Amino acid sequence: MPIPDFVVELRKHVGRAELWMPGVTAVICRGDEVLLVRRSDNGEWGPVTGIVDPGEEPAHCAAREAREEAGVEIRVDRLASTSVMRGVVHANGDRASYLDLAFRCTWLSGDARPHDDECVEVEWFRPEHFPAMKQSLLDRIDSALSDEVAARFQR
Image (tube, rainbow, N blue to C red; front, side, top):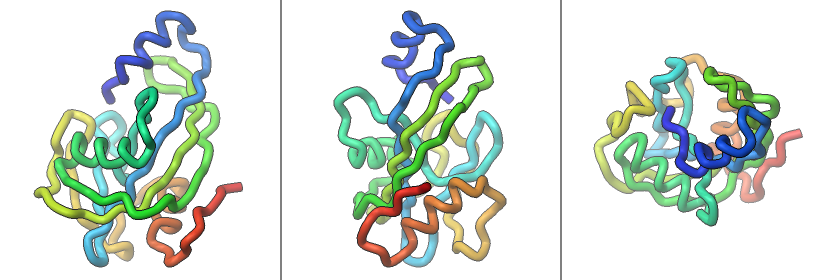
């Protein structure tokens, strides 16, 4: 996965020390289907995710990541959940913890396809046919697909 330029700059100063990073998950819905991407770095399936750039609104980040990764335009409907991924160690040795803001989003247009080198497949799935995924991603999707109006706070 490409490392954002601002993280490259930070790493020049802090090395591999743990960074606290804001991230987003875009759970993109089209009728009763959810858009999933298979990542190029680890082959795992999940919703569109990304790191929020400095000064960027998280909902704008979700829409940007949907365009960059899957080539689709979306509407960000609501914040679905918040959670923390602690103690992540990347393949290059960089360490981080992520504050994730998961959004329920609606597909507006665009043919879903791999749009950059971050993913190798993009597909629409009905929930009963989801491929294997990490439980934390399934939890984010579940919160986005719920009819709840308030965001879930993962504990």
